[in-house]
Image (cartoon, rainbow, N blue to C red; front, top):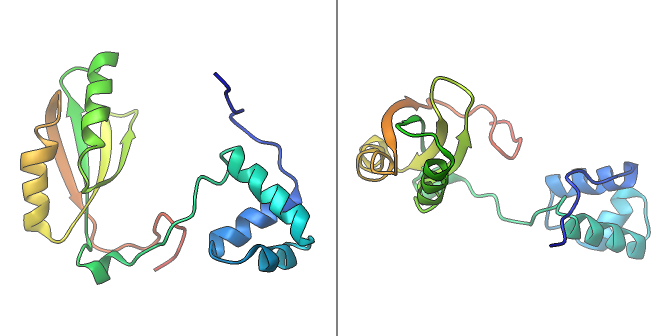
Amino acid sequence: MDKKPLTVEMDEFDRRIIAALVEDGRMTVTDLAAQVGLSKTPCQVRLKRLVDNGVIRGFRAIVDPAKLGMDHVAFAEVKLSDTRETALREFNAAVRRIPEVEECHMIASSFDYLLKVRTADIRRYRTVLGEKISSLPHVASTSTFVAMETVLDAGGRRK
């Protein structure tokens, strides 16, 4: 199996390309090249290498969840009854199938996982918690924290 290195050597041009695309992932290669100080072809080669090496994992639209009626965010601490490797794999596979779970992190703490859950409102969250999250394999208990305001989101944008 062809494994990519965990870290990729990058120079200042690579870092400029990444910074520019984080700000505007839709810019043309011509505009990107001009912004980072390269001609088009070397910029394209570097961009392809960054994508091929997995540094740039993709391009996507960043939507405003509030405009979609999905501005309720809750964080759920999840404690498992079993933390052997098989149980962790079963939990991981099952949590990936819950569309309301935006993020899932294994945590080194008094609980095992932290989930970021986005729903339309608290009633919908309660349903997701009761019918989906609590029913995941090996869940012993959960604890919920409701976000009152997003100050900084995953895209690094300040609200």
